[in-house]
Image 1 (tube, rainbow, N blue to C red):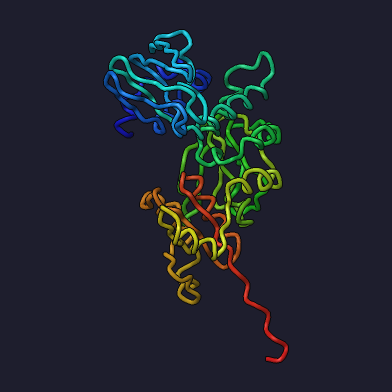
Image 2 (cartoon, one colour):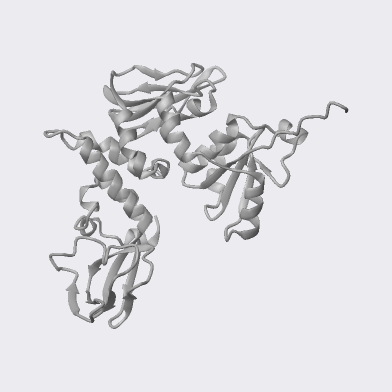
Length: 351
């Protein structure tokens, strides 16, 4: 956990919208995205006309807010109207200057906008009388790096297409080796992920409410690579293969051509790393120039060694492995693209 995250008071954060409607577990995840800013008195916080890339929440101290007519309004942290980000607009409309030692919580405005959209979309799906557990699974999705990439215009449609399924202790939801046609989110209950290794069965993970699974087979069209068994009675939210690809995969898996990759390398302010996810023997036979070979089977294990400051471009032989590789990177919070492989020009009839 970052130093900033350890200094963030979650109870204080709950005084602001939209954090007041998030679960404690989701708040704990959001805390990692928030930065703490301490300013002494008489310091300019922001000025009118300045772009507001960060949303700023005043948690302690006070500021003077001056509008375009030079009207000054004192604004202490305990003001009844201090429940939104200060001057909550994409471009600041006022000046703000601290009048005493002050503390601010900062969050990227794009992520705040996404939080507002998701929480309101989730609330609109609930019916009167539903308890908090009804929204917990939606809340958990919002905390995921993967679902944070779904455009706000498609969030309502995403939630609407999930269907509820009741499961029981010991039930195998997916079986290793079977085909995949559904993506799952655990709404209530627990499950265990296992995989056969030789003559034994290894436990890979324990899943709880908010965990999701089943996406690998939908993207790659490969058989299920593990078995998921319920370890309690529970409820799953299910999304069919076509809906998954239409809304989620198309939102997350972005593509870039060779020319666009060259432009990123030449003009971008972030370095691009090219990853080829084929098997080593394939890679040696047909190398992707400048690429690092990380086979798809090893990519999950290698995620911790990758730097999030870079842009990752994934290639293979033009198949679905590169899509799954980019998806896995995006799911882990990396900025990832699929390299569109150009087909060879047709041979001349005279050749």
